[in-house]
Length: 157
Image (tube, rainbow, N blue to C red; front, top):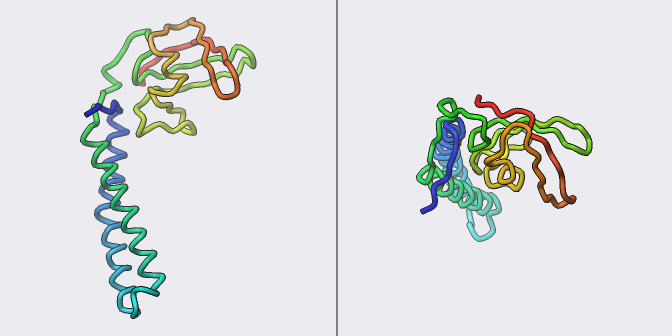
């Protein structure tokens, strides 16, 4: 069973979503199924079939969240330090072509969210960054072609 590295915040977010699916969504869907059953013939009852589909999706998500939480390896980023990029590091990069600055935190797959500045440790950019230090040049092959970056700062938040 492969471990999933994640931050404490990522673990807490998964736990919160799991509780919501179990304690809010599950009872709500069960009530919908119960209500739909009272409307007569189940073979032609669209509400019933929609509720059963919702139930299936919710139960699948619960199983997925339970699996991720069981395999989680929580890493306390606040206890990490150093000048080398590794899991949990917040890295400031400059695109060498456009001089555009970017800030990324390397996190576990379940908590990756590019809009919030968090990329998965398994992403091509993160894999290229791991082991690098401030001032290092990094080349990453992306679907749009090769990109070159310079590591400006490595910090731990």
